Structure formats: C-alpha cells, structure tokens
Length: 472
Image 1: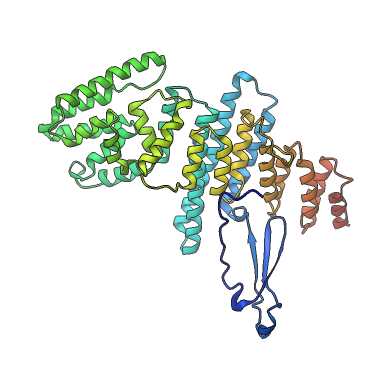
Image 2: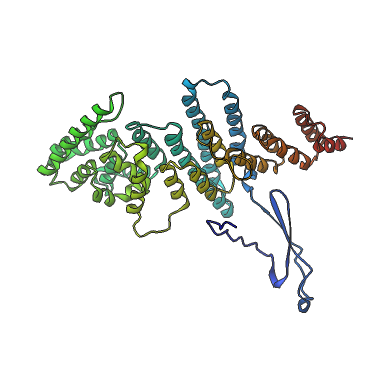
C-alpha cells in the first residue's frame, strides 16, 4: 500500500471515550456517527455510557452561510463555461478563459469581504476564530488561483509576466497599507520613524508615483536633501516599464537606466542620506539590501517578485521556478519545513499543475477550489493526458467528489446535479446513486427530484421508483 505523504490529523472529541468505555461507529457517504458502547471489559461492567452521539463531517463548509454563496454563484460560472465550450473559436478562447477565471476570483473576493465583516462583528470567540480560519483559507484560494491564472491561463510571456506578478503582489500584500496608515495619519508624517520605510515599500512594489509624492514632501521642507531628492525622483520617474515596445527596446532602456543608478551609487550621490542610498541599492536589486528590508515584504514570493523587478524584469515562465526556490531558501534560512501554502506556490512556479492540485487538497477541507480550477485548466487542455488508475480523469474525479459533497446538503444538492451532468464517464452513475439517497422530506422536494429524473430519462431507475413511492 502506498504510504501517506502526511500523517492524518488527530481529532479530539470532548466527552467521548471517557472512563475507558469503547466507542462504536457507523458511517454514511459524508459523515461518521460515533457513540459510547455498552460493551466495556468484564471488570468494568459498572461503567455507564454518556449517551452522547457525535457526528463528524468532512464538508462542514457547506453549512457556512457565506460559503454557500460561493457555491451558488460559482455554479453559474461553471455551467456557463461548459456551454461556451462548443461556441468558442480558437481566436477568442484564451481571452474567454481569462475572463472566466477573473469571474471566479470576483466571487471569491466578495466572499472574503463578507467573511471579514462576519468575523469582525461576531462576539462569540469560538465563532470568530472559525470565521477567521475560513477567511485565511479563502485568501489562500484567491492568492493561488490568481497565480495559476497568470502562469497557466494567461501563460504570460517575458516582460508581461513580471507586470502581472507585480499586480499579484500589490493585491495580496497588506503590509504596505498598514505602514501607510500608520505614517500618513500621524501628526507629522515626515518625522515618523517609518516614513522612509513607506517610500522603500512603495519602490519594492514599483509604485513609483506614491514614492515620488512622499519624496516631494521631503524635498519641500528639507533643504539639505533637496538636490538628492530630485536625483532620486528622476531615477524613479525614468524607470522603464514594459508596454507596447519590443522586448529588445525595453531591455536596452532598462540597461541604460540601471547604469545610471549604478553611476550615482558609485559617485556617492546619496552618501549623506543612508535612506536614499538604500533605495538606490534596491533599484539595483542588491540582495543584501533587499534582505535587510524583508519585513517590508513579509513573504518570500514578494521578495521573489521585487528581486526580479530590479535584476531580471524579462524573466520567462521557463526560468522563474529556479528563482522561486532560491528566494524561499534565502528568505527563510535554516527553516527546512515549508508551509503547505508555500508548497502550492512552488509547484505553480514549477508549472506542475498536478502538484498544485495535490498540495492545495492539504490546505483546504473542501473540494471547491481544486474542482473548479482543474475544470478551468482542463479547458486550457492542460490535463488531456492525465488519467487516473481507477478509470476517470482528474477533472472528473474532483468534480464527482465536489458534487457528492453538495448532495449532503438539504438545498445545495440541486447544484450537484449539474456537476454530475458534465462528468461524461461516471456522472450519470453517481447521480443515480445519490438520487436514491435524497431524504424526501416534503412533497415539493420529491417533485423536484422527480423532474430531475424525468429530464434525464431516468424513469426506469431505482431512484425514480423511490420518488414515486414517496409521492403515493
């Protein structure tokens, strides 16, 4: 038997198994039932059981009101993508897939905002921690999805790749906003101890306009540094950005600009201002200087993008994986155990989408992310040759698991029907089995189930017979 990559987590259930009693169990498709038994060892026959019944679910997210909105809204995007497959032309296909990806991320972002509000407003400590944990998982989903969009769907080319990665970092980095709020809302921003940290942080994200605005304030009130501020402002203003020009033209401009930065550093233009000299070193991509400012970046992948920005702005997809591993090692020296999220991002930078899916399955306890991302990437023809040993491809396997989870919820089960419909290998078999197990608690629900069976010509199956019996 193949060994597990990770040891399974141990779940402690309060009040269960006390005083040495045995534990009985039963299980259904998506949950376990645990209870204390009346079968103790003979010398402990006097022990009483608590009568406690404990249900363990692996799809708890289905019962979160905020996440139910995610499931409902993403269902429409999923169905629309399947229908558009037949209508799309090769000329517009890439743009269509990027648009679909952004739609998924918009839904994620809306759920993140709502989850943040719920976590901030609740007074119950346990619930607040639970919402905060769900928020961190949603944030990880959006972070990873955005990166996969850049690397696999956009498949960005040299020059454009770093532009997109800069947008990725800016969106997912909150440290700079915290510093800006602290500095700009103080009584005297120019005298604040983190004033230069803020300028440096802006430069690390190539937010030159904001950095120049702060430099202008410094130059306006400090005559001794005014000339240096103007030189540094000129360097920030002149920094080339990749756009409509050819790659060769951009590289030539960038090399001339870099030589100018190096000349000012060698001539000691900023020698009387350690802060401006540090910024000039950042513009040259000096690794030691970047590491000194690692607290302004917060993560190794921010460090990666900032370093590439000032050392190799025309990095390609084929090259970036070697830089990613190196930056992780440099940013966290001596830390041999990487976090699950780091493993996901590294796998993405290595362009190993199968490993991305595997690693993210460890991060989250539901199938939403891996099912929808895999389906989208399958439309990009990235999974065509990857079949699983049990007769289904990866896309279908993950969609089947996700849809099966939806069927365990009293209202979301109807969404699961459409996911099964778009699984050509085993979808109908799964649908028939799950329709047989639906609790027909009301006549309205039974009629819905019957209509689903009739629309799919399942009138001879056992599920339909059970529904007819419930309606009699």
